[in-house]
Amino acid sequence: MSLPDILIRYEKRIGVGLVVGLALTLFLPIKVTSYLLIVSVAYWLASGKYKCSIVYFKESWMVKVFVAYFFLWFFSVLYSENIRDGFVALERRVPLLVVSLVFPTFLNSAHLKEQVLKSFVVGAVLAAIFSLVSTYFHFNFSWKQLMVDREYVSYFSWVLVETINISSSYYALLIAFATLISIGLIATRNWILNSWLTWGILFFLVLFLAVLGARTSLLAVIVIASGYLLFLVIRKKLTPLQVGGVALAVIPIIFVIANVPFLQARITMLTNQGIEADPRFALFGCGIETFRTNPVFGAGLGDVESVALKCYESRGFKEAIENNFNFHNEFIQTAATSGLIGLVVLVTMLAVVFRRALKSGEFISIAFMVLFFLAIQTEVALARNKGIIFFTLFATLFFSKIEHEGSNPAH
Image 1: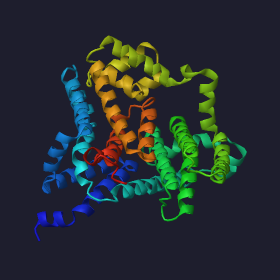
Image 2 (image 1 turned 135 degrees about the vertical axis):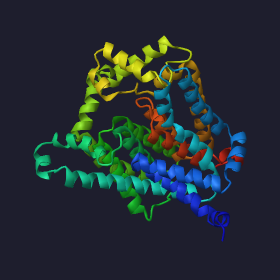
Image 3 (image 1 turned 60 degrees about the vertical axis):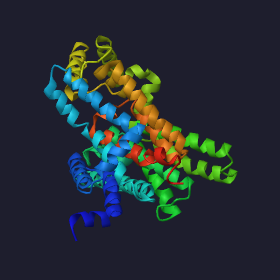
């Protein structure tokens, strides 16, 4: 049997494996993700699926705006003074092009979305367990000290993310989305093995998110879940008894959240001192200043980093200089890098995908977009490998067929 025959015979299995695999590599080192993308492109070319991508690009507005956003970055490199740094930064954004063009051709299984979502939740649980176990054995965690010193756990809120070498913000974003998927699965009685296990996974992920000390992601989960619960009550899809059961289940979670010192300190800082106390506030200021200097085209992808550092130096922001911070807001970062043109393209891209989410009518897909929108208020997700793949992969998974079929493929 020739290679083309093998690829055709096992087409569905290969497609499922690549999509599920990419979702799971979000919890693994970037090199693993890069290798899987290379394998995916090789299969895409060898199987002739690139022909499908050409057709899909012509028909899909979502892919068009993804590609437009990538070439916006490319254009911003060309008018940068430091073109070399610009192309280095552009290289990190290549997954946007690869995932949006290649992976729609792998969505050839009716149950693929369910498989990916459940696998992602299991992957999140395994990553969290690995972090906890690693923290316990490799960082000499002491339960006795924890019992007498509540602040002791704050240190391990920082250590947890080091165990899998992922930025705390992105780790929290992944755990938050896995939590929302669990809520969606419970609401539709689509269990991971059984109801008890699925409920247990939900509680575990919420508590782990609290221990991570992730304000934005935890707040996003609370807001989205509360809104969904209210929606179900208004639509009379929950009985008073079920509502009471949910309320009782939430009480111990709230108790634990309220007693995580690191998270408690971060929330108290904002409530007592306001947003000015958050280091991101100073970053926002430098981003806006950069945009005002170059309002139409921005500083350029190759120069925006050096421009940011100059602003940090002028304001004496040592932490930002030492850690080479970006502006920690997707809209401000895009405006500073690519000006008004970039901002228009970004807003258009998000609007197109958000419209697909509303059209789908599914809680998980809508929750995905709301979570991502909230996350990019304090992070620049579309400048990092993990953030780009997270957004592009799940947008492709949820919405790629809606344009063709006019309805949710899961229905």
